[in-house]
Image (cartoon, rainbow, N blue to C red; front, side):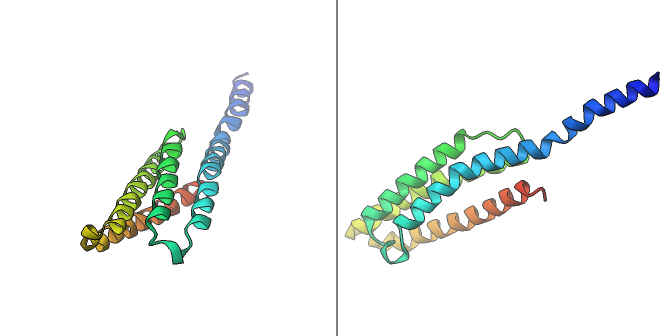
Length: 143
């Protein structure tokens, strides 16, 4: 009789153990559905030859800020994915702010001396974004 109860428990527990990868996959797909389309819009909007135009930078800054807000509302149940998602939302929001400041600096001749400072900040945020995206990819692939 005990063996029968153990089998029933095991048969109920196995599907539960198998749900974590499915849940993580669902959460990863939901995050991708938020991030990828917006990054594609940003890439099309800002070709390298036009990345010094203040009006364009303000537009891209708005997209990054909105993306940060949308990603910030996404709350995965898996703790490590949740932490990385929260970090990514912050990076997107910071990037929006930094690009806006760079646009203001480029538009104001009196502030031209700060251009290098803002470009470095944007570059550092791009590096953090790549690192965090790599971490999210690894989590989503089960590494």
